[in-house]
Image (cartoon, rainbow, N blue to C red):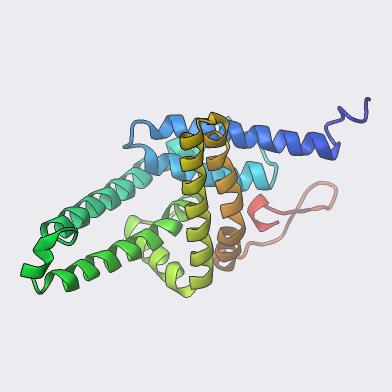
Length: 228
């Protein structure tokens, strides 16, 4: 019985991971409620998913709040800019009459709507990288956006995997609301964040600056959690 409740027991480790995912999901949902804070909350979601859920360092709330405060301004600006662009794209598509009979009277409507949709896809691909990159690198906004655009197309297969994870997360949230099984909604963000780290960390490690080796007093090499 003692072995069953031992924290090193595989079952207890799995349960602890599930609990952390649920706790992270709850915090994320609460911090997204003001809407303006979605960007900063998403940045913190990824940071905690990588550091706490995947590498078992520190605690969910401590790291979430620390990352939220540190990256609030930058994440919020990018989120608001992206939100405004999407609203404008949606508004322009509606003006072109893409969804009704007005398309027939506007020969250029189809081309323009296609251009708007393509722009929306590009921005979405940038969004797949921008918040994780903010959580890891200290760069100016313009450089973060350029780097996100570069990664989105340079690592296109990874981008497809990231989009698939986000799509599955959206489906999971819909199922949770549709079936009224609330526990699903409180697990999906944390689980999606955890899965997101695998392709995302594979990309980011390619661009992490090399650091000189450091050792502790016992001669053991000190490796930062994101380089493990």
